[in-house]
Length: 283
Image (cartoon, rainbow, N blue to C red):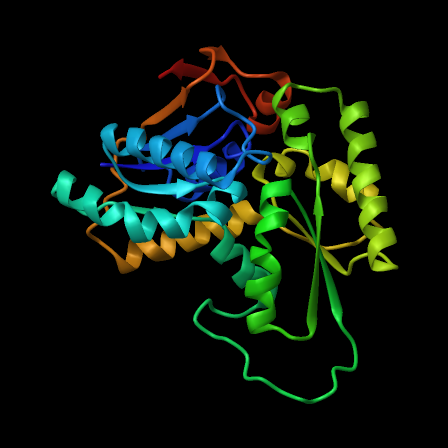
C-alpha cells in the first residue's frame, strides 16, 4: 500500500521530503487541495469537510495511512474525523486505515515529553517562564490547541500564538522573497511587542512557513531555536509504523503528487525548497 500526505497546498512538501528521506523505498502519494487553499480563514465545518474529502481521496488511491501535513486541518478536523468518520470508513474499506496529524509530535518536541505524560498540578512558584512563540494561521491560533495542550504538560512554558493571515497564500502564490521577508518581520515584531520581549524558542506552526524558515531565522534574534515540524512528524510516523505493522508503507519507491488545482510544475519557491522540478497531476 502507500502513505498519503495531505495539505491545503505546497506546505506539506516539507513533511513529504522528510518522510522520503527516512523511507526511501516507501510509496508516497501527496495531495494538495490547491483549489480550496488556504484553509486558515475558513469555518470549522468547511475545514472538516475539505479534510475528510482529501483523506478519502488518498484512501481511494491505495493509502493505508494519511498524514495531515496541515496544522489547520490537524487542529480543527483531526479529532472529529478520528471519532466520527474513520470507524465507518474502516468498515467500508475492510482494512486498517488511519489519519495522523502533526500537532502531537510538535508538542512532544516542544515539551520534551511523550504525549501521554501530563504534569501534576502544583502550587510551587515558577522562577522563570520559557516563552514559546508560535507562528500560525488564524484558524490554528483560534483553536488554541498549542496553548491548551502544552499547558497540560509544562506549566513553566508560556505559549503565545501569532496568527499570520495571508502568509500561507503568499508562499503558495510564489511571492517574492522581499515581500515574504517584510510580512515575516512584521509578524515577529508584533509577537515581540505582545510578549514584551523576544520568544526563547519558536514553532513554525504552518508547514508552508517551513519553506521560508530562513526568513524567520533572519527576523528573529540570532540563535533563536526553531522547533521544526517536518523532522518531528517524520520520526513520529516511523515510530507509528514500527508499532503498527498492519500499516504497510509499500516498497516500490513510488512518488506521486496530486492537486485539486492546476496540473503541471509548481512555483519556483516550492521547487527550490524541494531541490528539483515538481510535476503535479490534477485530481
